Image (cartoon, rainbow, N blue to C red; front, side):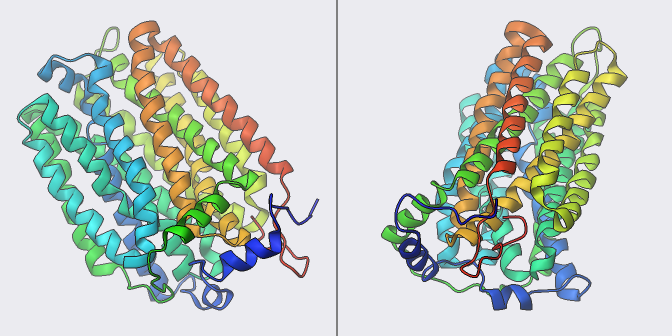
Length: 439
């Protein structure tokens, strides 16, 4: 099974052309990166964890407010969901620029710029005078937020010792999970008392505090080398990152998995705030306390992947998420919450492993890790935007049955993609050894 995979053109020539210009860390850099337990390692992980929280607080701060926004602006559920889908669409498009841009301006500089500008846009969102202005600002918010997701896994791979790559990627995804939870927990209770504008302002204040922490903690890059922007090189990197079978499967898997999760969570507020449940926005926000389970599952699966490989763990995450959707079909509120928790656990296992695997696979293939990560996240946020909006439309048309069919179908596709990844052999070095144990 361990055979060298062939490209559609001469692999030796493509490898030589790409390795000479790739921005992935050298083997020496991978061995001299921050080791687990050192002060530098702890600062990197703490800063990236907090940055992930800030980014996803602002990305998802309207999700718990969707019914309230619908009432305030007299719009339908599908229209209110545009405050989510336009943000993720803007993020997806900006990732195609932010990834290559980071190769020129640097990972840490782009992270700081992204956090600062996104906080400013978030303040403007809270003061938006009209529905159209709010949608335009939410689209701009997605563009501003793109800096961290575009470079996080590449930065971790460059700056940390290779033995910690999978667990560090898992911890970063865990930070995004807590950020997604905090975005709902911060906004919903404030909205119950002061309205949606103050709720969004509270999310902006939370993100500002996180940005300050990142500014103080995030170490400067030690192994990054800036390169001039070269369109020919960028297109070559894009072709390489878009032709590998495993990378393509990972892009599609990420899109399907997040599409299922966001479809469920976008429609969940409409379901639980209407009869027979009748929850308030503040009570609904408590459901999002399941997100720390995603943090734990992402971190644990990363550690297991460092030991036994991503191929062995990935399918289990997809099956667990599918089981969660099945549980959500019950009319019992406790079982619905359990189903949402199981869905979150399975999703964060799959996404945490896939995001780290993309970078490892791209590095083994001799292509740009930043470009591959940008393509993965482009697919991921397109899936979030498109399928998330379809989730609200399915709710309006067919109720929770329609939402579950949409999410379940996407997760079945994710399961099939995870199974196909087990059959794709790892890339090998010229010496015949695997280029990375999880590539």
